[in-house]
Image (cartoon, rainbow, N blue to C red; front, top):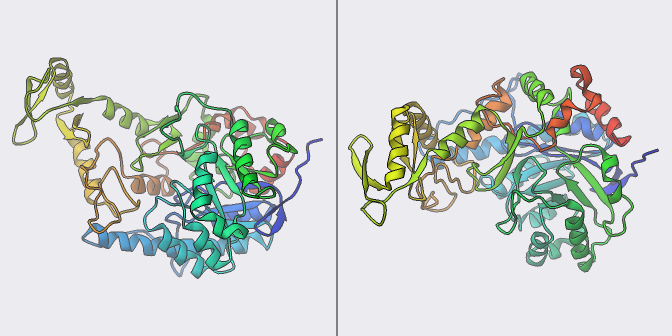
Length: 465
């Protein structure tokens, strides 16, 4: 019979089953507290978490600042207030069981300030911080200041080595585990490097063995690895258990906790998950972070793909094969295209995609006038939710800009993630999901639309299924 052995995580023996943190507002205090109450490690998202009014109603995130920098400060205040609120809910819901972690993205706006703010305001309520989407060198020092464990999310042994050498070796005792997030299997943003082919997935076991070898060199033999991405049935991962080349290991579940009664996502989102089939998840690079990410193929993602396909290079003056003139914009400014590209551009214009928008790569994309207006409005309304945003060209530096043109091939990630988390719209918003999400429709546990409680799911996972 399959048996899950407890593991020491964040100072307590718990089931080696970790809820993956999903922002914005998708892993919250209720879901993470329930996961901890079931004996595992619950993880709420500290990325623009929901806050509440005195009467318990959701606080609406309205921005009043006239500049991006002013709205950026408002967003930081929202984030800290919401993170503290969710930490309290998770703590109360857990009933003192399991462990409560918080997940943040290093590439989110003001990551350091938000971490300090939440951990200060929720002292004693959070036991660990998981952090990825970038190279979070300073997370160890921040966590050490508040007496909580840190859990870097990496996708290769090489990345962990860089973090250890630069910072983590100074905070050895606070390293709770290393989260290996498989760049081909995980949902949300993935850590594919330029040396890795998104079309050629590598098996996770050799990469984890390499990570363990690297950790052992640093004397981290007893520090667990958390396998994240693609985990569904634990029985499919038995070769990782009691494997001396892997060492102590826990497993993170990001996609399966979406479909629980405590999960805060909409009924429409849950229903869509039950209908997914293999191939319905796309690994793409439209995110304004510049990272690859995995999401459900829907009209939102299809529009981004089509938008990018209606794209041609241009020159400001005739050069080489770019000798054909095209007048664009209200002023009819001339750009130069190849003959073939001009023919394509004219066909797109004839089909209603009359607006030519410049990209940072000296290309034009062709969209409808309504789409161009929406893109421009979203760029203008930017509140600086990332450390650097390709879509709006915001950056949290003295200049407040990346120094590049805003990229109309991308989108406002804050807007779409807020909308899908708080409305029933699952067609025109970004729906992150792991590549195993299609298994909801194949797993007999979910037959006839069954949606379990978190405890029922954890109990099921612990059996190997």
